[in-house]
Length: 618
Image (cartoon, rainbow, N blue to C red):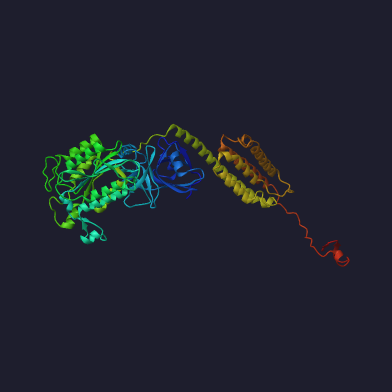
């Protein structure tokens, strides 16, 4: 994963257009189209991925990726980070579930989320589990679920039609919850399928009563509540037929039900669930009224007020129409009552519909008035009661809902989601980008200077073997010098880096070689550069004078150093054209060690001259 050398990251204050998930490139696009893209950064801590929206902006200079300081910090986009930006199409998320990060009511949080400008927010949905957050008014909210139609490793975008829900864990949001359990005669119907391995399934041809399904779900609710400890949450269980009866707690009111509850309270809830029996007619209006009165009398200040209505549904007709089937003696208009309770007492209603028409027909073959499930009233109540959409289904749906509500409260954002405005760049961001434009220009100058410097080094190396006794500069040293000059040099290490470069570029010619004037001048330049850095390493003012730098700043100084070195090397190349080929000095035949004369026979005349200890052969 690499980026082009000329591309660099510039961080802007997180105000204005470029912040969070919006990044900026130059108006020509720098090869990147506007729209969604995946930004990846590789650091020592691993690879970090973030879905972003690319905006082409005239203020952003070529070769620059503008990001907010918040995104820079999130991805650790520091100078040594390797990053990549890849355009990628986005799909609209159908649903997203956010976790409430602070102690406040889900309803208040939902209103804030609606106003937060989330429309357009891109999210990277990986195939592997990972932490994902959405920023809401500067506060990160953890993403629990994103529905992308079972597609992964994609960019999902929050659209105007995306369903957004907020989940408040029990440790962060207290709730007073009244569960209204329908105990009418129709709850005796056996049309709830259960897994084949269940003992109940073996005994009853794979089906259990609606009431048994409700009881199982309430037991699961208890088990989840017993694993939660935090804000005070109170629970009451009421059964209803033609009248509403409080089943838990026995002493009246509401009771805290969580990990801190006494064993006798837990046992009392279990017994209350076991005593629920189906009989009688349905009277939903009176049941809602009784639940509201209980919340008013015994609710905990500051807690969420929630009524959970669980029923197979009563045949109900809006005012002015006729209803048929099981008789429902409502408080005349339960929908109007619920609308009033939500508006004036801030009571919300969730509705769980047990069974469906399809399940009933599969079990019994034909509709039966008063027993066939009908959830029209439940859906109408939820619409005016500020709750989540009606949950309808069998045992799995009941268990899933009550397990969820046991650990916390989920609230749907009902207000229209807003879009993030395309604000202009903040003034301080413009100033930073203008400075970056100047640096980018100097970076372009440095690239051109480096290219010319490399050509000059190659030319000198090509003539070194002809006119010098060896290479003027070692090839590995010149390569290291080019690499250092082409890297991003931190300002506080500029002097140290340039000093190292100068030392690498000293000639490696023999000391007894008579150096031509151009080489002498080149060495003198290196000496002056070295002395200037060592004399004033903090501000490098002397180095700027030696190099005749055009402009101020580290970038201009590096370019000036490269240009002066290039001029000196070109002078050597030009002078080399006038020099004769270098002729190596003749070498004497090597003297060979032989036996010492004193240790052998006396010297004799002949073809060899005997010197004590050596024999010089003719």
